Image (cartoon, each protein chain N blue to C red):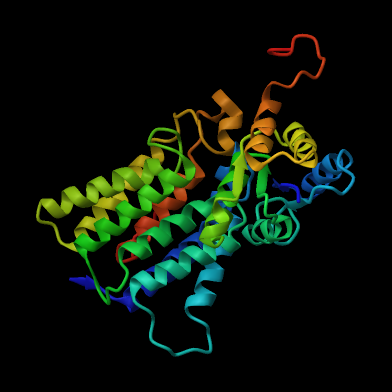
Amino acid sequence: MAVGLVIVSHSQRLAEGVAELAGEMTHGAVKIIPAGGADDGGLGESFTRVRQALDAAASPEGVLILVDLGGAALTASMAIEDLPEERRALVRLSGAPLVEGAVIAAVESSIGSDLERVATAASEAMSMDKGVAGQAGG
Amino acid sequence: MAVDGAQALAWLQRAADALRANRDYLTELDAAIGDADHGTNMDRGFTAVMAKLHPADSDAAPADPGAMFKTVGMTLVSTVGGAAGPLYGTAFMRAGAALAGKETVEADDIATALDAALEGIKARGRATRGEKTMIDALEPAIEAYKASLAGGADLTAALRAAADAAEEGMRATTPMLATKGRASYLGERSIGHQDPGATSTALLLRTMTSGEEGA
């Protein structure tokens, strides 16, 4: 089984969109679970949604969580703490840019890489060259 | 002088009332440098807290303060809907753990609980003082509380000193540059606005005093 991904965003539609975009690269081989918006679906963060997404994305290989803005990382870290202890070590929180990070992580996971490698690949998205003139490092 | 479950519950009710009364004000502050939801979120969270702690159809005696704060924390995490949920949630859960098993809480226990809350917020938010956050109200409040007790003040006076220091710390966030939270995305434009998180923290600390004073 492949490393699962959880996409945490303040926007439900953004989370769903990122999951859709990343899923296009992996054709269903990787569980990519969106956890966006507040409990009512409006902008915000939902501990419940993130916690449920962790269950939905669970895999023996582990789960990588990607977030849009800092506040989402706080909610994600609470959700990780809520997991039974033996599952916590199988979950990693990524500081990668959401879109690039999710796409790269999905691809990396789909080729059978372990959690460590998927997490590293996602963080390398930080310096991804978009082919735009003047981009830092590009 | 000690605080029991009934008094802790009364404080939480005053806190919920104050957050309700200041909901629009907090949201207005948040609109200037954040996502304009802090007042609504805190009101939603504390409304849920009071419904959980004190259901209208229940006449059960309140739990001890530690157990109560743990419930408060867990409820805030799942109902606030913004960054304040994990932060205040962690603060209350850590405070609750620090008070675990105590039927009544003494002035020194409150210092221990406040320290635990502050450490929890700092760890969760990876933040320190001076970054335009709730820490800028809470940390000076704890210092003032401890200094006041050390100087021989009683609990009431020490809580008042804490609330005064929190409000001073809250006002001191205005000229600060935000480097944590949503406001940090504004960079220099965050300067000149009072931090909503520091403001709600100061409100909560003011309601710990007997409650007749407004923030």
